[in-house]
Structures are given as structure tokens and as C-alpha cells.
Image (cartoon, rainbow, N blue to C red; front, side, top):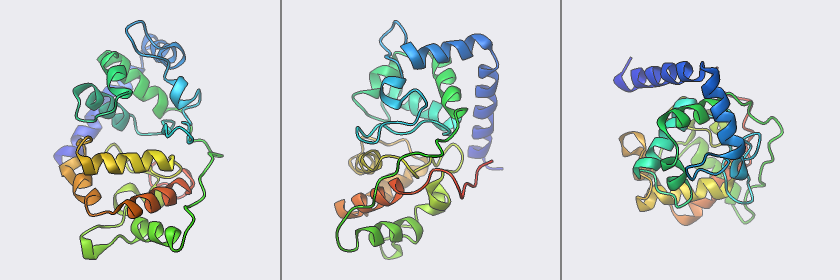
Length: 223
């Protein structure tokens, strides 16, 4: 197993041990429902009580995401390697134990079976463009299919490749633009920064709409 794989295993074991404490579980529930007294608001105010997210506002689903991925995003927000005016101060207001607890809390929530999906963008070829990029890529520009890393239908694979299926199109689009602009730079080997720069604004909108329209459950490769 490669080094990065071992890092994922260690992170998963650490989070599992952290969650095993009833006190940590209670703390996570409190953070989700009420926040803390150091500047972190309730997680559910943006991501919903069930972790479903809010598509209209572009707040992503957290329910069922990999715990190691969620913890790393909180750490990266706190460090500034992932930039966001809302999430950075929140992550900085959470202790390492609180980040562990929140990550495991959302990882253990079920993926919403009836998650609302967005109709692909209207316009000639918009859905075809998004589907092509997602499932086949554009090898002439050295862009592989998104599914090669993010799994069939974009259901996500482990701690490094999060689910895209059923996430708000506005969120996916914003993240691709953040990779392009360098305000997000926490991807393995700089892969997303390279790929996003090969995409046009029309490409980004199309692939975001395509993934938003996919079911977050079904052809999952994770157990």
C-alpha cells in the first residue's frame, strides 16, 4: 500500500477512536445543533439538520462523506490552504477534537436517498458536454474523466475523492473556479488545479449541472 493509503487508514482509525468517546459524540451533536461559545455557529444552519445541505444557497451535502476527507477540509480551512470567507473562521473556532467529532458525526449520517437533484442546464449540447467530461473526459486537453477519480456517477472514493453526485451545481462550480484561481490548493499532487485550468466557464457549468443531476446513491464503489 502506498504512503498516502496508509495515511488514510491511520486517519480513519484516529477518527474512529475519537468518536468512541460518548463525550465526543455529545460534543459533536451540540456543535451541529448549537455551535460552540468560541465563534462557531451551528453546522445545521447551513448544512441542514440531516446534513443534506442547501442546494439553492450552494451549501454542500455532508451526510455520508468520508470522515477523513471532512476532517482534512476543516484542517485546511483552518490553515488557509482552502479559502472560504464563511468556513475559515468557523474551522479556526473549532478545536482538533471538535473537528474530529463533527467529521465523524456527518460521516455516519445516511446519504439522503431522496436528495433533490438539479435538472441539467438548458441549451444546445449542455447536458452532452457535461456527460462527456464526467464520463469520458477530454484527452486532447489531457483531461481524464471525472469518474476515473470520483467513482461511477461521481459517488466518491475514499478520503481523497469526495462525492460529486447530487451536490449543488453552484457548489461544484464554485470549487472548480477556486481550483482555477488558486484559492483552493489542497488536492493530491495538484491534480485539480491542473485539470480545472483546462476547462472553460461553459465546461465548468455543464459538468457541475451534470453531477448535480446524478443520484448520490446507487453505483457506489464504497462499502
